[in-house]
Image (cartoon, rainbow, N blue to C red; front, side):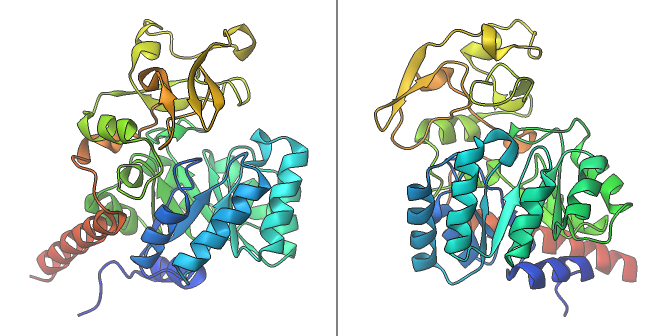
Length: 342
């Protein structure tokens, strides 16, 4: 019997990226380190390293460790428009020197960056929040488009629901399109494949795993959260451009906004240290989320989570989470196929 998850488009995606199943690990900054990327890749998914604004020394260390843990292809996620130009140049040069096979980009499309890594022989997956951004990314040379809906955790660029945006991009391109934003169940993968998407990308679902570099407090808050416990706000904006909204779990900072979640000017926000990570001070209202070694007022930090958080009830190994998603989709698609045949 054929695998119902192996559609023509998902097979195209898997062949292109070198994975077995059409589920991508989101390149979450700080959270997606080598151990999580390797766990997803070794289980058949596609791994990404979240290296947003990280120093070259860490990128080199993470790529080396990832290659020691898996022979599978992977991507490195950097964000050109939110990174100081000198650091971005150093990051990309380092990745190319290490023969990183693929890059994931996000936020504003920067064609010259896409073109540069493509000319060097690397693949490009570009996450976008609008149909227009998808067009620009494709024109610049992207190999895969990731349609990020407003339900996503972390930084959210667009404002359309995930499957609505995915459908809009599918109408405009022949490239593989991956749905992302609040997704993490078999039903999500089945729906994406049925509408013609090539697969799904998951962030929060893999944040709540044993290999994730997120702090245990963050993971616990995620698995305890309900469907209405996230909010889209730009109050956690220090280190990013003005107006860069994020989806987080409600906490003391968001509740103090009294519903005024958007429209915050980073220049008017106070600089107050509330936590530390490896001796580095972390500010209230910064985009930093708590990592394994973070200490301080974790509750007041940005606790990223997508709207699909209610489906996550426990912290499990990444391979278990991936299997739940894929096996769930197979069961749904098989039942539907049997029903249509009867």
